[in-house]
Length: 129
Image (tube, rainbow, N blue to C red; front, side, top):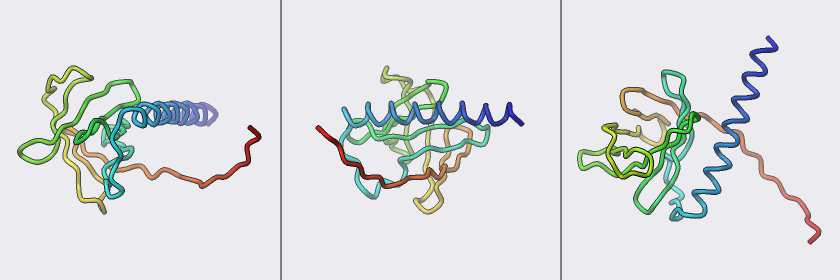
């Protein structure tokens, strides 16, 4: 049981650090995200992997996985999104398709995924200086 708790804590720490890095990188470079962009989020794939979908350059998204893999997503003519490996601009052959906003699902290459509900808490504090 202790090993499971420690593994969960490590996983949560990795996801937290990944999200913090994504927020910093995305805020510095990304265009504002429309408030109705429901595809931005973290998804668990059927094979157990975790994938984050974040805003990127105007008209594009970026995906990142916990193992450090990343890619850019650009709209595909056939619908869905074409993935490009890392920052190379080279298509990697993967297509990502999102379900409707209410479903919270995606098709990430050959794997299906479902959005992970993240707990959020509004917080205020007073600072001195």
